[in-house]
Amino acid sequence: GVGASVVGGLKVLGGGWATGGVMAGVFLPYGRGSALPARLWRGFVSGGLVFCWLRGRCVALPRPVAFVPLFFVTLGVQLLHFTEEYVGELAMLYPPLYGGEPQTQTIFVVLNMSIYALVSWACVLVFYRDLRFLLVPVLFFVCLGALGNAIIHSVWTIRLGDYFPGVITAQAYWVLGPLLLYRLTGSVRATAVAAIAFAILLPVPLTVLMSA
Image (cartoon, rainbow, N blue to C red; front, side, top):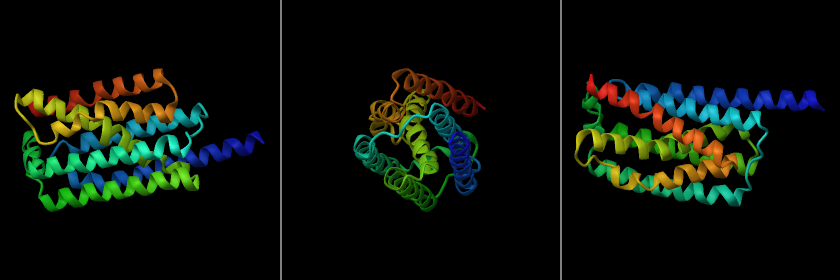
């Protein structure tokens, strides 16, 4: 009945936000003294808001064949993107821009590979085991790992007036990020609103903090 549907929806919402909270608790401490916390929080919040919108509108999940292959293609691009960042020693370059200490390559690898593993498992469990609350990590990757990286690396490069590690591979996300959002929302308008909002909200604090 309606009551059962409401309770089920609340459970999914609660599980989703709890999952986001656990992710924040695990990953945020690694970003002290850099812009990483600001980036991660916006990834969590943006993914959480899209998640709530999908639940509130009762938007059905797309068929696995319509989303999962594209998701893993994007994750493959992310591995190339990570390689560009690693070779260019991004971990040592960006924290000093915000008054922090350089991050070790070891922490950089562990942090990123842990996130890649988590979002991969979450995607499979969402679409093949119907554990919908795990859509939050998937949306975190879509909003921050895909669209966010396109924005962040472009901001760094424009702000510094020079190449910054990761900017070349990040350009693919200007296409892949919105496309993933569209596959989930099924709405051009919702995709545009989410992408534009994130494009406005993410660069401002990053630029202000760089200027401080």
